[in-house]
Length: 426
Image 1 (cartoon, rainbow, N blue to C red):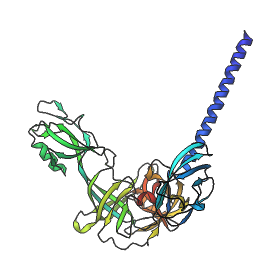
Image 2 (image 1 turned 135 degrees about the vertical axis):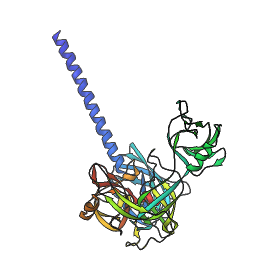
Image 3 (image 1 turned 90 degrees about the vertical axis):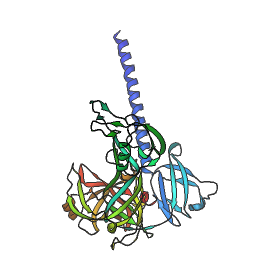
Image 4 (image 1 turned 180 degrees about the vertical axis):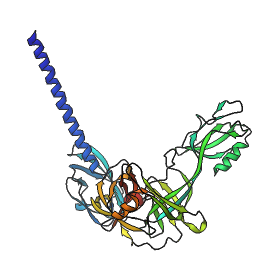
């Protein structure tokens, strides 16, 4: 009996070891696959009419696929086979797009990679503070609330009908452009059903609601609304045609944390009047004074995207120290010294930073670069990266490579940046 129990325990122990070994091999394989996956960006951008070499050191191969009307003779050796295990040289022609389905070790599917041949461009780093004022497209719903009527009954007419993130475009076919007008229309509803044209998830729909009277005798829907946003940031670059890019991230609503859909927006001259130093656990802030008058308008905001705000300059921004610089693509960036340009003391000034990490494949496009402030002057002034510095251009090897986007809350000396290639094509 004891012998049988011993053999059974021995058999179970062997099975356990085999399962443990198998699980370990699977974990190693998955970790290896993921490591190689993150080493190759999903999009590789190359400059047109140049010869460029990339070296990701990944044992993956794939065939370049293009549309029928596109030839691939622009690539070295007229070959459509791509091997990323060592240096690969591209001889690029005109702007074009290609797709490569990479396989690890030529067998295991890794990822699809877009190869974009882009027009080479030069940008002038700015680093100047800007005041931002934008109006939403329609009236943004930021929350659904409740109120009491004369009898004390709790009412919420918009509950289950409107959602935070909805935009009210029109009421009973009347276009509403500001919240004051929306409040006025509802106050005169006399409690009748009203048809609301609403934009939800890029789709326009019509909803019917009946305003209710509160204890003060006013008709309400029970919603929190917003029709504009304002703040301070930093301009990243200016193109030769007068267009600009700024912030390195989009303008999100503070309550619902979603990208705001804009109807219009303007840039204003801004003076920094106070600096709240950042400390670990509490980000600092630049406080700007903005006079919202026509004489202070610098330009027009035309696009609000996850990669920044964009538009055109038509006011005098003054002289900028830097000349137009070439852009540095992801594969051009390296760990080590760099500079950021920002206007802490009134003039655009370069401050030393260290690029400590480069995330070629990051789900958050605004955090591809991790940097640490090393400049003693900037550390003494701000404690590192502070709110309001978003958009500060990052320079390395005399190339514009990115823009500051966020501060690390637990380490005010460190922050994130976006690759400039993600900003220039928006």
